[in-house]
Amino acid sequence: MSVTKNKWTPTHGDPYRPVPYRPDRMPHAETLARAADLRTRMDGRRTVRRFSTDPVPEQAVRDAIACAATAPSGAHQQPWTFVLVKDAEVRRRIRQAAEDEEQVSYDGRLGEEWLAALRPLGTDEVKPHLTDAPALIVVFQQRHWLGEDGTKRKHYYVDESVGIAVGMLLSALHLSGLAALIHTPSPMRFLSEVLGRPANEKAFAVVPVGYPAADCMVPDLVRKTLDQVLVEV
Ligand code: IYR
Image (cartoon, rainbow, N blue to C red; front, side, top):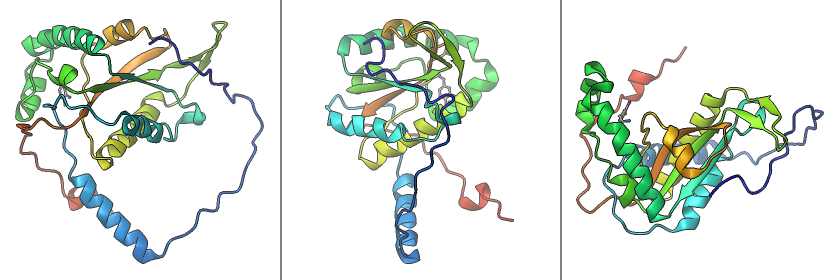
């Protein structure tokens, strides 16, 4: 637990140093086949809130985090830290603190409109996924860069960058056969305390990872069709 092991040297102020990028082009037929296959596979993803306690192959989770960390980011500052929590006691502490906050939220802090929006999802203040799932990935945003001597440097488009990375994380986990959930306990400050993260980092989401429980149920949601989300001009 604690601070990032390998210190990243920021490229701030470095000169532009281009290198060639010439990926092989595949035939259209291959692109079409891959795109259609990915579309079907991604449509099979569901947010899971009831996890089996079965272990997952840990390297697959690390690989998914590595995929997420290939995300584009503002000024290529890669303003993210992924904390992989496997320790059962730490997961228990996170669950306790999250449920304490969620209790207040569901008891009224969210407000009627928000609670009504959540009703079809069947969520409540009980968060068994935080202890049942064998791993939690707690994603932190680095709001700014913090040098060892305390120097701060601005990071740009942090919300967007970390959001993209988390989308890529979810895709990588799903395509690797693992189930996940974006959990956003609110407020999330307790995560910095429990995980001992530095002051420049702010928790963004908790992503439990595992397999769906044998009796896992999900809400009967309808996705918008392509027509409903796509405008072509
Ligand atoms: N953070 C709460 C509430 C919640 C909010 C939204 I927006 C969701 O899409 C789902 C839940 C919780 O985790 O239950």
